[in-house]
Amino acid sequence: MLATRIRRWKSVALATTAVLVGITAPTLTATPAAATTTAYDSTYYKNAVGKTGSSLKSSLHTIISANVSKISYSAVWNALKVTDQDPNNSSNVILMYSGASRSKSLNGGAVGDWNREHVWAKSHGDFGEVTGPGTDLHHLRPADVTVNSIRGNKDFDNGGSTVSGGGGSLTDSDSFEPRDADKGDVARMILYMAVRYDGGDGFADLEPNEKVNNGSAPYIGKLSVLKAWNEQDPPSAFEEKRNQVIYDTYQHNRNPFIDHPEWVEAIW
Image (cartoon, rainbow, N blue to C red; front, side):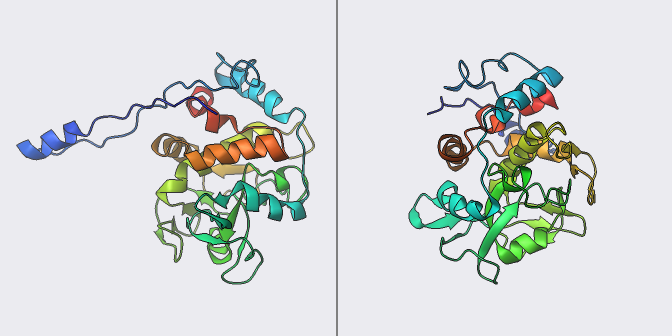
């Protein structure tokens, strides 16, 4: 489906050497995502490849907004049962934030159920559950009802106290930090929304910023943290398959940051 990605990470040898000689090792961070090649570069992405900055963002907006099929909010239930199916148990879905595998039949609003999480919180831009941003599968994921409620409409940032049942997620009064395995997913979903919905289609112009506690403004932070998460947690096979299913079966558009995670740094 997609060519193998090549990613380079800073060696841990420096840290090991530091311990041996009794000095403090510097903090190690991931290098920017290496350029990738996909099966869609000469077709779907042909007008974006090679561009950077606002030119790349504009080209991607045009690409991912063209000929898109939209579904109703009620139809999202069944769509998520397909897009987020547990690869090891076809009767279950994998839940965002917790990573738990739960029966597809337990969709609803009660404790122990899973519901439809808007990763770009719907109050950030006041689009609710309207067909369009409110039903866009690229940022809708199944999540445990209780964990979803704890996340609420909080912005994304590092730090906080452990979320019960959250798989290692953390939260404080104004932000939410997903478990490590979902950090890149969150970043790429948020940045997809910022490119897809630019204010030109009757909805708010969604943008990331460097704040938390954005409230009802059409912003979500923190951009610097989201960029770091994109580097730290590259696209997984599950995320790539999900992108493909949405493209093939439902909306017929792609999240470009799953196919090309290096485009995050190229734009922002």
